Length: 256
Length: 264
Image 1 (cartoon, each protein chain N blue to C red):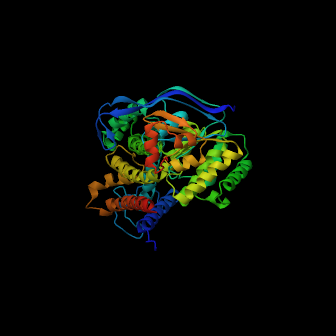
Image 2 (tube, helix red, strand yellow):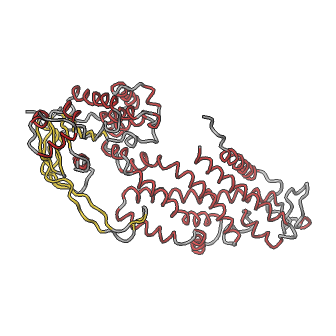
Image 3 (cartoon, rainbow over the protein chains, first blue to last red):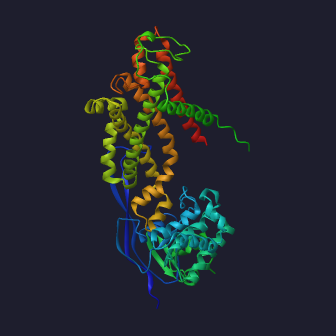
C-alpha cells in the first residue's frame, strides 16, 4: 500500500456571505455576515501517482474543496494532510492565471526563484527544459501571456505548476475553457508527468467522459458532500446513487 | 489595419519637451539675473532687450518665467512623488489585506477626501509655514487620498486573479506578491493618474503662490508672478500673460501626453 499523498478527514468549510446594501462597488453601512456551509464532512485519500476525478454539478463545492485543500479558505475545520512538497494548481481560466506584466520566461522562473538555491543560469536552463517538456518552443520565453493562445497559456500554467516538482496537482476544470482538440493535448500533457514522476492529480471536471478515460478513482459530489466514490467502472456501470445516475444520463452516458 | 496617428501623444510630447527644455535651460542660463531690479526698465514692454518685458521692479520677465517654471515643475514633481509613494503604500496594503486595516485607513482617507485638496494644503501650510519645500510637503499630503484610492481599487481587483493564487501556492510572500506581482499590473492606470496629478499639482502650486502662501518672494514661481501681475494687468499685460501662457502649455502638454499614453 502506497502512502497517501493527500488525506482529507471530516473537512467542513464555510463561506461568509455579506449582507447589507450595496450601490455599485460601494458598500454602505456595516455589513452583517451570515455563514453558509459549503463543504460537509468531506473525507477521502489520494495515493501517490493516483488520478482522482471529482465530479458534480456547478456550485456543488468542487472548487471550494480544491481551495480548502490548498489552504486558501480560512474558515474551515477538519484535517488536510499533504505528504510532500507544495501542492500546485492549474486553474480553469488560462487568461487570468498568468501574470500579464511579465514575460513567460520570468513567469516560469519565478517558482525556482521562490524555492531558492538555483543560480540564474541554472534557472534559465530549467525554464528551457520545462518549455520543451510542455511542448513549447524556446522563443515563447520572450513573449507576454497576451501573445499566446489559450492552449499555449495552459501549457505554460502546467509548466509553472510542475516547476517545484510537486507530489500533488489539482486541475480545476483545467481544460473546460479550451476547445476539444486542444483539450486532448492538454490532458495528455498532464498525464506525462503523472507517469514520469508519479504525480498525483485531483482532476476536477464536469466532463464525465474524460474522467472515465483518465481517472483511477471517481468522487461524486453533491451539495458539498461526497455522496459516492469508487473506480470509474463501479461508478459508471453500477451507480448506487440516484444522483449519479442523473449526472451520467445528463452527460449522455446510458447504462445498459 | 492602418494605425491612426496618435496626435495626442505627438503634440503632448512636443509641448512637454519644449517645457522641459525651457526649464532645463533656465536652471543654467537666464538672459538676466531673475532677481536684479532695474528701475529704468520698470514695467517695460516687449522689446529686443526684454522679449517678454519687465515687471514692476524692472526684473526681466523671460528670466523670471524660466526660473519660475523650474520652481513650479520641481514643486509639482515633488508633490506627485510624495503622493504616489504614500498612495502606493497605503493603497497596496489596504487593497490587498482588506479587513480592519482597510476600514480604518479608508475612513481616514474619506475624511481627508471631504476637503478640497487646496484647502487641505492650506491647513498644512498654516501648520508648517510657507516656503517652497513646505508647499511640496503640504500638497503631497493633500494628494495622498486620491492616489491611494486609485491604487487600492486596482489591488482589490487584482488580488482575486488566479495569478496571485498561483504565486501564493509557489510560496511567494505577501510583500513580494504586492510589489512584484501586482504592482506592475497597476502601472498603466497609475501612469495616467500621475500625469493628471502632476497637472493638478502645477495648478495647485500656482494657486497657492497666487494666494501668497506658496513660494515666497523673491523666489520666482509662475503662480507667484501671476499674483504680482494682477495689479498691473492694464499697464503691462505681458507681465501676467507670459507666465499664464507657460502654465497653459505645461498643463496642456501633460494632459495630452496622459491622454495619448492611454491610447498607446
